[in-house]
Amino acid sequence: MSTLVNAASREAMAASELQLLQATDGAQAAEITGLADELFGVAALLGRESTLRRALADASTEPRAREDLARGLLEGKLGARSLPVVVEAVRARWSRPSDLVNGLERLGRTALLVQAERAGRLDNVEDELFRLGRIISSEVDLERLLSDPTGDPAGKTAVLDQLVEGKVEPVTLELVRQLVARPHGQRVSEGLEELAELSAKRRERSVAHIRSAFPLNEEQQQRLADTLQRIYARPIALHFEIDPEVKGGLLIKVGDEVIDGSVAGRLQMLRRDLAD
Image (cartoon, rainbow, N blue to C red; front, side, top):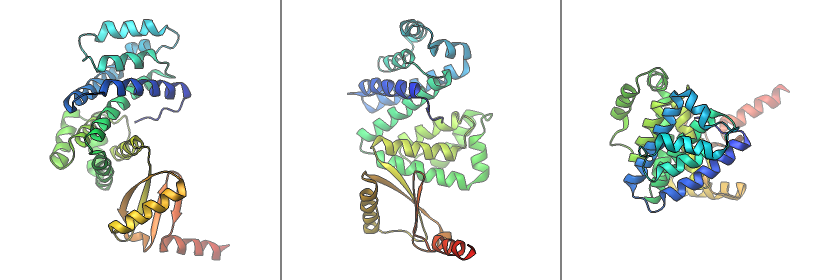
């Protein structure tokens, strides 16, 4: 899952997401799932067809010409909700052809997260993505199998379904199926973490990854959330990981910042001070 680092591609993504939100307005859950599937399908098509990918993302041609090409190819094959989203993405100016493909995939993921949000299940999806990422990262052989870009997508999906089908939200399952089918050379656990971040961003929240030696009760979690919100002046989503190596206290990471209140962290700092 690639990050759109160039300003032009970020602007193209923002314009396409606005069109996506219009397309999901008033849609039923099944319609949004269908919209996401079609966006993933177009992304896969462009991923395979390099000539078409370059033609649809060629910033030197007029947006209308790119739109006409997309409509001529896809009209009648895409639904009434997904075609305008694809057209808007094609009309936008992307820095690289690969950014158009990545943007369409991200639009598909965003559509599924919108579905979960409107059903009041976004918290569950975010938590499941994070936990599943931790589980897979701890199983080396499973991670290698699911992350293999040369592996049979159907076979990998079957393995995934055995692991989680019926145990997670339908949106979680669809997101992970798509990630496993097209890992882009990325470890699946990393992709799941990015999906959890995208889910948190959907609610305009940051994510705090918290390692502690023991579980925190509900009251402690709420106090921690309130404290972090005061520190960062914005809501913070908490993801917990039990780690005996922490020894005591908490190790908190928000973005690139680390708040180390663990015994292990204090001992490490003391050892550094003594060594100076």
